[in-house]
Length: 425
Image 1: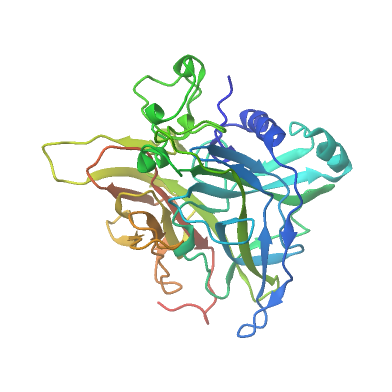
Image 2: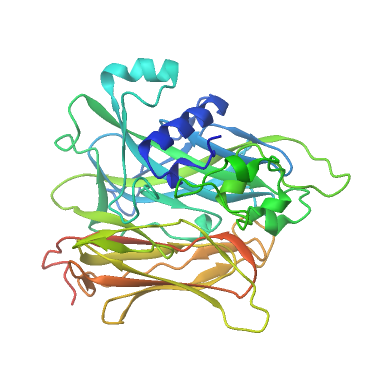
């Protein structure tokens, strides 16, 4: 049995392709819609457009895991400045997290052999004619490969990159001959309407879902080994189409939802400064083969409740940066219960701390008790430089409460060089 874990967490390309085929066969092949491109009035060189993904159907308690291929995306040689996502219903209304929880969305880049495009579209064969391109690191294989992606905190976390920095895409010189650049969404949403334990359902606790009786005998984890029976919850228990236990007598309608996403970009020219994007994982257990670091990210972890302690739970990883650069942006992808997460330099200095924002109301983006945003660090350009080979320490802190499937991912954008006019040391 192949675990239908989303593409973003796959360890190798073979597994990724198999899972993509399974998920693709379940997708509703409905046309996506696109709004017109807008040139922002206050920044005439920045363009923006809002897109709508393919629809996916949810029902009370249902888990939906989807890979949405060939999503609408700006064309040409561009520099992306921001990428923002939320879940909406068929009328375009924002859906609150306590109805449908956005566990994660990840935007993954791939290139497609032009001569095989028709075949791929008709056959859904992802073994041939497609190559996936990951971000700059740091996890092993194809684990955490995305360029953009968050979860329930999406609406309240800024993705804006300051001028003149951007993510360069569509450079025809760098594109492999005979291929074209495309993008996919890897998503997981959990409809918690009527759920017996709404918060536990969002943490994918195995006992709250209708996992098959032979689950532990056939389901493999990140490392390719069968899951231990001590695995109490997380990504592998939130498989597509599984069901969270509902309150007795609860009935609710099915509905169709979409991702609404806004991208801001500029046409690439000599004034733009390209950035490299790294995802660091607080579960990364780094070893070495001589001078070569070997990463062993787990993507998620559980937190046991320590009853005789009020101290928070701390997870640390020491991560060597083969290639450094100037820190331009930093934030974190975390889950509810996070206290904060901090990235330290090798000398112990704080490079960035990302703090949570919790909701206090009912409206989408301010759901009470839910993590609705993470703060972002924007160091003055040139003020923080990570050296080649520097060992960074990532520290993720959560409340001392039992939780499953929590994450501690830190996102950093680095620039190789900064011009004198942008340098502010």
